[in-house]
Length: 521
Image 1 (spheres, one colour):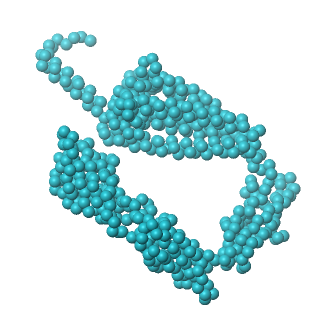
Image 2 (image 1 turned 180 degrees about the vertical axis):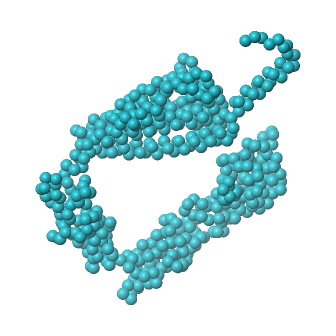
Image 3 (image 1 turned 90 degrees about the vertical axis):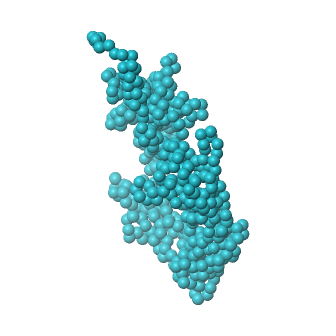
């Protein structure tokens, strides 16, 4: 290239140099929304890894069960499955160690992949994975190649083999903006933000779990499990319940193990064939006691021969009894209404009454509401039913009475879809969402209890440039004007704490709640 004949002044050269630096900085700047997106993908992949791992555990357990039933046939398949599990775990653990190393390179020795601080660091991944000499990236490359060849050899299906090979491919490829293809490890980890590198490694772990599952499934499919399951045909009676109330219905399924659904066996009880071909035996007992019954299944084989497989079972008929169970939990909370269910099978609700110690018990429609009085003193519910015109005590149930647990404080704000959401700290919240909130609220919403509490007051703690704590008192449950002014002046990423939160529940007990950390988005 010919040299320019135009001579630039020192000032113009400096301006050009600053422009080049600025352009480079803009190119390296990664949007926080993109980084947060990687975090969400990472969380989703981690959950998927857990679920796929459980599925693989179940497949391996089936192979173990088969090997236990038939060691001669099953041991060799179990040995191969164990080898798959060991090699998969080794590679999975190695990838985990690389994620930790990358995060520690970015955040220091206390860094952890579960809470990455410098998500946008584009040097840490390359420093760890492409380090000269040790070169963990090359080691990972070789480990994936070795594992891929091992697993593919276990899978006979060509389509699945191709899928595994593609998922675990380490072929060089061109990244957008590059002229030539790069080595796999360079293309994956050079100039990658930390959060992207960690997500990529988690995705690789997902591929390992997938490959492991396909190999284990192939080994399970190769096992001739039918020999074990049908080498001895047995008839089974599967009752819905062996205990039957007088006047209720007894129901049981009578089945043959490994039966062919296209040729169902005939079922005979006391010499009579069942009217249905699904093996459902039903009767309505009229007296109490224990009863036995027996019969046989008649199976026609392909050569025309017929075999009979006997079975026997029993059931028990008992007098009606009552069941008392808490709708929300197996205990009662003092100071609030606790809905409970009380019923006596075979007896109309109008003929059922109940009383309770240590509080009150009232009927509301088909439900009952218990309102215990004292904490620590048991509440005893006694159920009486009118049978044949005579009141009888049919059940006495004891419940423990406890104090309501402490609620959780939160800020209510309007979400993107217009619904109200509860912010309990942790993730950032915009300044407008904080200021538009009516203040601090508290409730128990743990999927068992749903109880609102009244917030009496709270204190916010802000920090100045020197790190000094500046407490501000609220206006009851609402933010005071001084608190709102300080929130308005807070910059993005700054945080303050809501502490000394006083709240009172329906039981009248005043509580001091845990503090809440608020991060301004």
